[in-house]
Image (cartoon, rainbow, N blue to C red):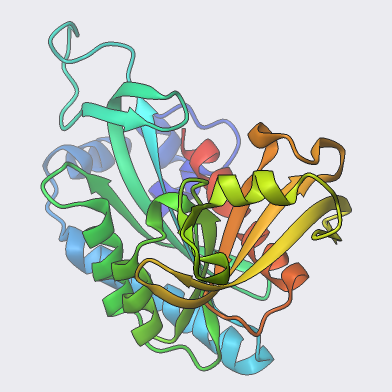
Length: 284
């Protein structure tokens, strides 16, 4: 615990002397623990998960507010691949960076956070080494979650909106609210059409769009209700910022498997996934 406290207070420089300031143990004892000590990672992880579930699920039962399960992944980039590094870093690989649009060398991790009524806690942080897909990682985490006491939501970006994950979370009592790729197929009036093609046809005029305000920002939003491949009876929102209406590069799409939610509710719940982006930035 003294190590964790030291990391988050001012004046931390990553040295054992920093840890010793907040511990009854001498710095050499702490160094021996870090270098040679044995601990059970799975036991530590399970203890953390139990504590997080107890806090978040108790808050949901007390307030009636939904549990939010927030999932995303990130890459901690390294400056050189291991073949060029003087001291190669263990378990670093080339990963496809969607942010950079190219292969990026470093460590990739999948993070899962649980939130309720403004409380946000880190539930799991899983290193991705390509031995198991990220879809399977998230599925396994979904299966271990208890069924929440109230209707709850799984929040994600477009890379995790898959039939397998949606169905697994549904079995645990979570609806899905996530971003969608603009090449996803929709079936307006029974006709197959890519999302971006439908948006281009509709955005000739503002007539089919509603002006919605979320976090003091205005968006033109078209609401589609129907089936997607592998997903039945979902709501899909096609959204443009007010000042970029009809601009293909500004088009954003979102999905909710709970068709009872209003357009504003869907967008308001989706922005609740922002803490995971802040968490990634702090980690890096």
